[in-house]
Image (cartoon, rainbow, N blue to C red):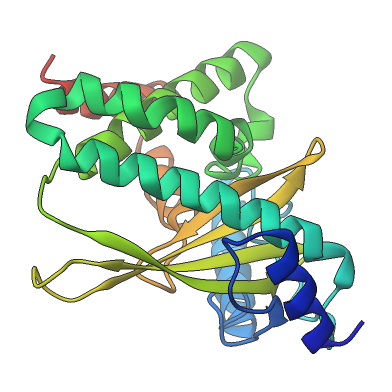
Length: 256
């Protein structure tokens, strides 16, 4: 199937999509893979010397090589991922527009159910620790997943506490590495400062397309950024201290 056919078929199947699914190696999921691989190797070597578990099977250990043509099997996924992105962004803007009325708990009530449905939060929780997660026992893994999901929802609700007028612009879908999709959006801040790129990376999980990472602004992976923060705490301290640190941040956002 040609790129033109993909565009036409995508538009027919979902009114949300108005640009073709395409292979775009300038998007953040592809950009700088060689540099990332070099940096990751240096980090892994350093952690191994210190005796820490490495990140070798983590979410962003991505093969820099990839297909040269659009994978037509991702067409249905592009429509589903775009519709999910629309739902998530609508929930974010709804919570923000009623921020004063809702408060932190109310914003979590609006955003939380949608985030749990659209993100693969257990996977993201695991990826945020890389292979360190595999070194934890079953109880610690369960605790970390619960703490991370609670932290994530509280953080998103806290960050969307502004009631100023904003809107999302849909920019299209790109094919990304490892049969994933990148749904690109732009947060239009309507005169409040520079607009912000916010791109969502989707993977097919148990038969559904779910978000596994967010790039904002544009090229910064939230999973990668948080992994760096968490590993820095683990290098200095312990897993229990990291959990306590996360719980303190969540409590402070809720005013507890």
